[in-house]
Image 1: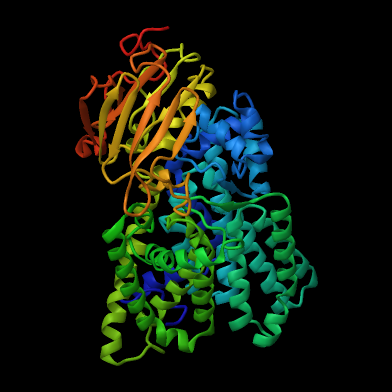
Image 2: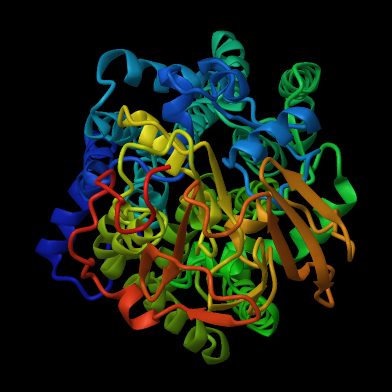
Length: 624
């Protein structure tokens, strides 16, 4: 299809108008503005999940400051220090099943500077913080549009690729969560590196060569995911370097050196990951990473090309997860079949495809999520634009019926998903980056608790997400209120939990499906570090004993013995019942109670009345 024919079946006047728009010099600005416009609902998101942790670190006013570290270390969550982890667990910011030796420290120095800017200029305005993230989204789309034009020329296909990338709803899952800004920063620097590299190789600009290496380092120091830049550098060398494959590969040595320097600095400064349930460090645990990637890789690509979110790969369990993997494999087989004629005949298409595949490999280090698809999306949007032009064009595509029927069917499927539906899905994803906002809000403790918690322990017998619940400590401190003396989350809430009263001071709890089952719970412990029957976890005022294991080594049943009677006024009991947190009264000795999630109420947009946090709790337990 020629540059004058941007859409099949369009009238000549409409085709000319669309063609002028897609080939306009202003298209990079238009694409950036379009992405920001569709992501504007993110401005109302406020803080969520890791944002509360970052806020406490950056404000520096928390009583936990010695444990959380200075602002420069806001992405150092778990230090690999059992003594330090034990102290954080004892306060209750980490749940009792946390591995004492867990390590999760991420080198994102340039991203830290942007967050420190937020807290220097608009400390209490999450809207302005999100506005900065949207500017980074616009910057990433702007440089991507320029890059498409450098690779594909001024043809309308480059403009189409830019718009496909701009309105991809996966950008919403990234732009709507402040803690994910790092991806947008890394993508901005990473794609800028590719532009500079292309100028060096095509135009012979030596300053561009130096600039490209500097930009690669900037991407890596923004987020480890910046390594996705190297995927496209390698693919460029293999397929489109003007001096051929050999010359292209030899030109990669400065980038190899930059990555080595970064990796050495990262290791020497103590950054890295081990024994986190959702993360695998490919640099230190290659075998486990390869096993995880074999499962995560096709699910990520399924999320990249279809309306099936990659996030389902993190939430599904057992047979459902296996079925999702098979769906992904079947779809990828179909995609490979229908794109093979294009890939055989067009080196640019091979560049996008291989770059996309290479860029997907590093993000297999964690559970599949759409927010991980920014770098892979650069290649996918370029390949998709070329594929649509190839299928609907008048020249080049095979005319045989066995290929054309599935190829055109899949092409129309992509038109619906990526052109028709994506602009509607993007603002919804931007407003709900971690799932429906009204559901996520219910996972935080919002029941009135009063100001007098400094000498009391808050005990939550079950919570849909331990991370959301334990952030009560930081959320109260950020509001100028005293957090609880200790925070205890005993068990997961989904889908149900059975609580037995064993004696005056002891509860036994059996969650349906066992402990450490759900994604946010698995963050705190790797499957490589199983519990043993009889193993105990001792914290101030409470001892946990594992009494039974599941077939895959997770705790199935545990007892919780407190140093004081369960009716002590020093304990504030809460449970998650139905669709939210409410006061809990331990059952009498030798009796049990089962608490279940009310899915209809949980998914409803209505909130229980009168649930403003920090009011009196006189009806829950008297002040000591």
